[in-house]
Amino acid sequence: MKCLIDGCDSVGKIRGLCPICYQAAVAAVKRGEIEWVWLESNGFANRPQHKSSGNGAFTKALRQQQELNRQHRANCAS
Image (cartoon, rainbow, N blue to C red; front, side, top):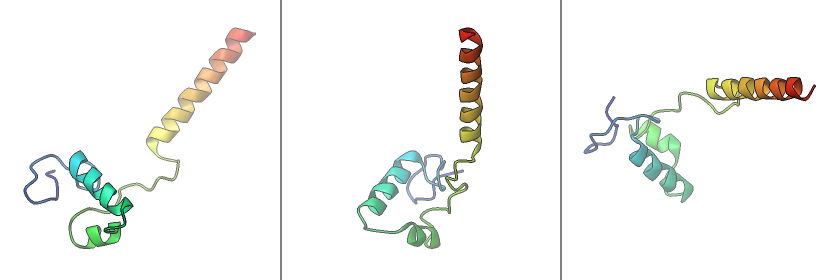
């Protein structure tokens, strides 16, 4: 999928934006120049696909690996 921003031919990855356009949007939001709601409602960004609940696939995989590492260390110590 192409980045949502006219004139940008990069691939949209986050909220429909390429990494460069996404970082520009994040910076504008942090500076208080704009809000995500406005960007979303005016076609400059998509709504986020996943809320950062700590239950996403990455977080689950990371927790599983950490648990395996703990078990391995416990087995090696005994």
